Image 1 (spheres, helix red, strand yellow):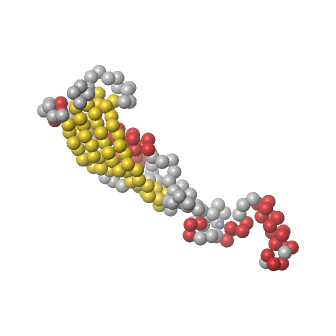
Image 2: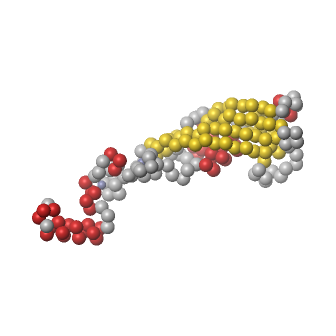
Image 3: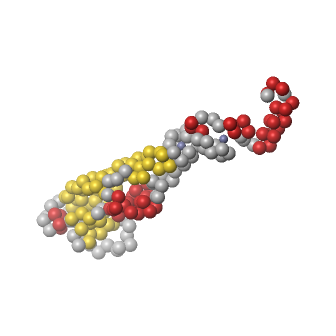
Length: 175
Ligand SMILES: [Zn+2]
Ligand SMILES: [Zn+2]
C-alpha cells in the first residue's frame, strides 16, 4: 500500500491525512505467518504524514481484530488490540539499514510494511477463549467448558488413582 507523497514533496503541503483500508491481499505475510488466524479485513489505517520543517513523520492508528483457535480448547477465540505507530521518514542520506526510518521511493511511501511489522511485533503468543478456559480433558478430549467428563475421578497422579481404587474396593460406601 503506497501513499502518494507529492502533495508534500512537490506542492508544499505540510501534511497528508489518510484513511486507507488494507485488504487481505496486501497482508500476505500475516496469512503466511499465522495460518490459523482469521484477521478481520480490511484493516483500516488512519493516519497522517507531517512535514516538520526539516523532517517528516508518519503516524498510523489501526484496530486489529482476529479470531484464532483457543490455546486450551481450540474453540474460536476473538482478540483485538489497538495499534499506534510513529516512524520518521528519511529525507536525506540515511543508511538503509536503519530501522528507525522508512523511505520514500518514486514519490511514494510504503505504509503497509511498517504496519505489518508492528502487527507481527504485537501478536500475542497465545489466545484463550476466556480467562478461565478449562481446556480439553487430556484423556478423552472432551471440552471441559461444556461440562465434566467421566475421566474426572481418575485424573491427577496415576499412583493416587491406584490407591483410590484400592480404597474404594475396601470401602463399600464408595461404590
Ligand atoms: Zn478455550
Ligand atoms: Zn475426560
